[in-house]
Amino acid sequence: MNFLPSFRLGVLALSLLAGGSVAFARLDAKLVTIPAGVYTPLLRTTKDAAAVPVAAFLLDEKPVTNAEFLAFVTANPKWRRSQVSPLFADSSYLEHWAGDLEPGPKAPPGAPVVRVSWFAARAYARWLGQRLPTTAEWELAAAAGYTQPAGRTDEALQRDLYAWLARPVPAVLADATTARANYLGVRGLHGLVWEWVDDFNTAMVTGESRGDTGLERDLFCGAGTVGAKDPTDYAAFMRQALRSSLKANNTTTSLGFRCAKDLP
Amino acid sequence: MKTTALFLLCATLALGAETPPAGKKDACCAAMAAAPFSAASLYQTDVTFTTDAGQPFALGALRGRPVVLAMFFTSCGYACPLIVSDMQAIREKLPAGIRERAAFVLVSFDTARDTPAALAAYRGQRGLDAQWTLLHGSNDAVRELAALLGVKYKQEADGAFSHSNLITILNPQGEIIHQRTGLQGGLDEAAAALAAAARN
Image 1: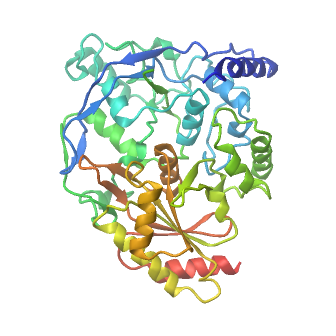
Image 2: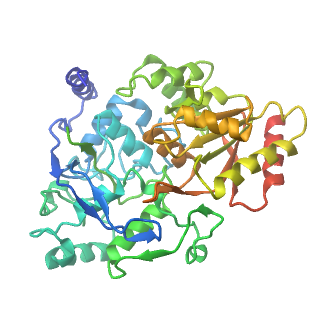
Image 3: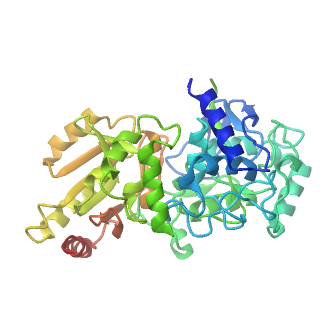
């Protein structure tokens, strides 16, 4: 990894060349250590473990912002809106940006970047020597409350979460740093944007709701009985439903991402 | 606009301007050297695999041939043996002349146990000749290919994989032209789609 310092300088230079009035960001993006824990899958087959151990890892304190993503597309032209292949991002990729290298008024520098595909999010993470969190990692970090380890019993967090789910997506997203940090010091896992996970395509649900009640044995090898651990965890169902409905090149107005990294 | 974009993309790759993924670039760019891939071509991916002979393999190496591709794992007891048999059945349904040109590709979900050596053993057991390419990849590469194909998969606690049962037909440009889902029927349609693509 000794290429990193010079590489980062290069990125900086490129960003400056691009004439960005947007402050160069990301180099100091803060990663928070998430202690080892146990993820309890919402839906599992009879063959799945009820509890999945998750090793300690590093997770972005906040979602990736427009300013940070601008640095990425500046350094990697193939990920600019006008140049990206439709294989990797659909036609609404960064559609709210004013231009290829100009986020503009609908995408403030500090707001989470949205309308990015899984491929783009992954490429961004790889560019920094990082990766996307797995579902288990993301859910583990998101299970914390504001003031206590368990978010499910943190009334303030639950209230904010459901208030967010009930609100339409704002035309201009708030600055990521305005999101209240949770017990682990991570901001915006709930209440800001939905986020990609690396293994979003593990959700064994068919595309059509009529077909989903009984997973069709022929479509999925190993599709056994599926049961939910906590049918009252509506928000977790929403996340599961979203992940299962996505294709890797999809982009939406409320779907962003953050990066993760193994502990050194 | 997108065509220009692709051109620039390839130029970028050729110049090595794309940043970290060191070592991944070479195989991809060798395959890209001729002309840019089409906007829908899976061969735009820069992930690479390893064959059961231990050789690096970029999907772009399949360019120019119609392809029958599926993801599987060798210790699979239920669907995967059927998928391989169905791919063999598709082969039998192809008209002579096209049958010999088609490539049959199996990519394993099981990045830990399906090493190139394990895949080579599987090739022997199933009697798969040189027309078949068996690929091992990193978790990253397998996840990306699955995303490109729309395959969903998950490793269960017992080490086996739940996965979509999907056979994908690619035209000589590497574009998905047909997918056969499930384990029943659909082989005639898959063979017809491949034959039509091969004639174009």
